[in-house]
Length: 117
Length: 117
Image (cartoon, rainbow over all chains, first blue to last red; front, top):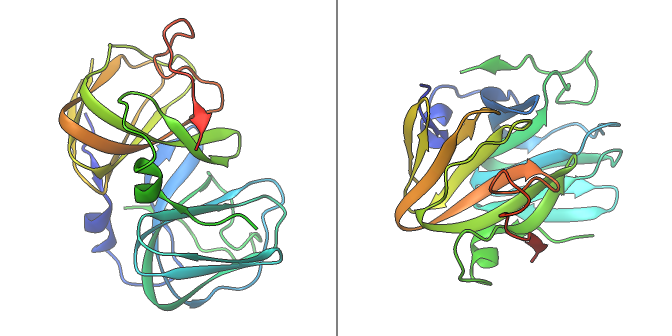
């Protein structure tokens, strides 16, 4: 029987930014924790929505449709096909959900390798 | 441009237990908040995993494979086909993700009607 996944505990296991770590799986999706700091490149996912839930800190999702500010306990789903980039002025901790194998940058050539922790 | 979804704020909008409210959508899934108190009937979902993330309080996921205790910031995914029931000795607030239209009880005849808030 697997244990519960404690998100804060998982986030103590690594320090690098923009490197999502898989902590669970749901219907072919990777459930991940990640640390953001600074600005990620603009990108889009043609065939998947992009799920963000802030665990700690504050992020801004800049999109071609406008910006969304997210603090702890706030979520936003960027619809598929919409150009966006996450920005965090200071380090923020975020829960992400993406289909297994989806490149975090929208492009396999520039994507982070996702590993389980 | 839709606003961020603040989970705590959404949870102030209703008081009934075992009645999931949809707050967002992700790739054909409903993202929901719900209040648990007491024990839900045993059930399973034949064709979908069942995602639970505790926002506030404490729950126990009893499954035919064993039990999992979850507090705030802890998540667990019950695999498809596994008999389970959530139990909360005191009121708990939970984020759920299920495919759109999936009955929360595993059975359309007994399922709660899910509405957007």
